[in-house]
Length: 109
Image (cartoon, rainbow, N blue to C red; front, side, top):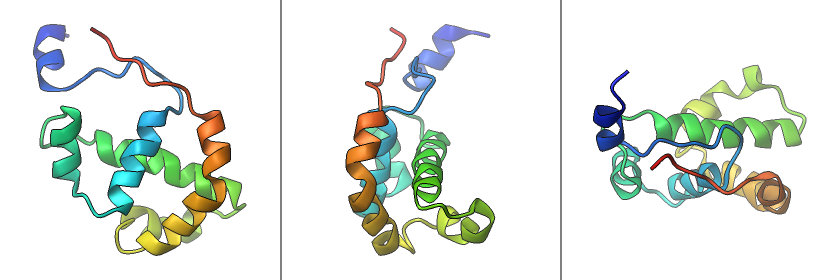
């Protein structure tokens, strides 16, 4: 794998676990920023799936904290902006616990 080419197109997240970056991205989604805007702000390519992947991680954690099954909420996970008020309510309710679990994001240089 050519690391030079990859590192020029996006920041390489060194953190394997749930990080504060995941929460930050999900909050950007809930305030109405588009994936393209978020990608540009964070240095990812326009076609990067990082925003989707990272925000899903937060949504799945919120569902688990509410003891809700993923299969029953696939539409809400697929369209978080459509259900942004519902997600915001869950995020506000569980934010302290999520922040406590989140680790600082680290990137490869």
